[in-house]
Length: 400
Image (cartoon, rainbow, N blue to C red; front, side):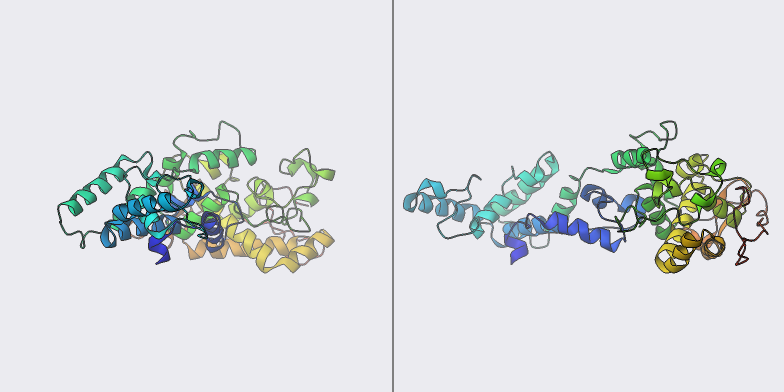
């Protein structure tokens, strides 16, 4: 009865958005509600709006089960005006609040839901047209019991959610320090990435989207009590091979944050070695690639996300020991093996120049693009850390 007669609680949107972040394993405030409602087009995950479903249910109930609500509401308004002071009338036209009631009358909500000028359908002509057509059928005593009113109203109302992808991605890329020459046309970035990612399966899509939207669970992003440095040991490298450092950081420490890992020379080197690419992955490769069919960036970001979170969430003691001792051999060896296993699971391969994907990582109904040549053999660094606890995989970064 609540679904059909009452508006959603005012805090429901925030509750929904929080639940969506938890279900998708996103840090708080990664995406907006509008973007979440348009997520299926680019991520492969369909998210339903509970608040919109409640509005649609109320309208369906009003039309199918209480079609005379407007007449009953007029009688209630007249009776209210005759018996109580006008100060008890709601600021919303036609919604009386009688003394002792904590909300407008049940029938008033239903009458409001049937109005063609309902605020829900503002700027949606199809909403008013659909309500008008249903009310005409009711006036002609035509049955609407078989009409899927709630489904159609929900579909119409969902069109009112503006896609927030373009503005969010533009902001995130600027926060990452991506130059304007690498920021794709902000007005078309949603369509660009939608077409780019349509062939790969939802899990890989989601990991790439989480990277673009700053959805890594880094210690800085999660506001942890102790903000870690780069977990792969960038702070222990010679200064000539470090990723760019933000000028406002104390003691020039490279922090544990997504913006750094997009340019981290060690992580980039590990992914390069694990995949067999013949060059370090650049920011241009990560964001855009050579064209709309180049999946190098999406696959590299997905692998990086998996590697980082496997270490950070599953092997934190190893990371903490490496930070204390300054020796990251075990961390890098574990990261390398994790990247290799992930790429094998999803059939990610390389011809030396780009990353491609086999049948295991493709969305059903798609076929892999052929590689121009056999994958390049993996080149590893055979040098060991001074503590001799494992190979120090640094790829094209100068050896320590």
